[in-house]
Image 1 (spheres, rainbow, N blue to C red):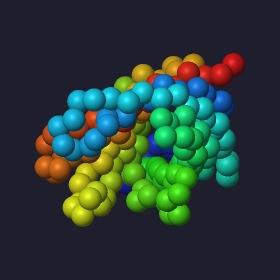
Image 2 (image 1 turned 180 degrees about the vertical axis):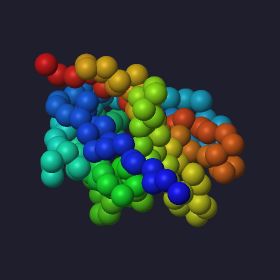
Image 3 (image 1 turned 135 degrees about the vertical axis):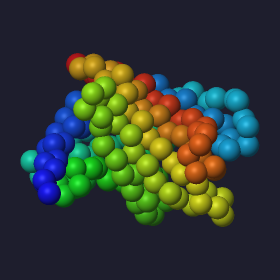
Length: 163
């Protein structure tokens, strides 16, 4: 029996360190067939902690109903080679269920998943990090009510690095 060696992925989010502006698009309503998108701007500042095994950002979204402040806490698990991503926002009082996943070595895209409550039912949620360059990156959130057979993308963010 051979032992599989995990790739050290503790620096996979290093591309995101720094300050960013963002253009965000959010479906007005989720999981009801809505096609109306609301666009708003934001800013983020991302830092690394604990030698790269923690990645932390502070977000400000300029939403139509006022400012939303949020944080993302990303924690690397050396044993599994995966990341856990936790989100909290203004007024929630708790960290959301973690999104768990990793980046694909071949194409550099990150996929993170959770099984979480939504309006009294459990659904699957997914984050995708893609189109990563030194000065831009795209993030998407999607929900699935059929075990991941189909996905509704409900929030997208296109980040641009602030020099």
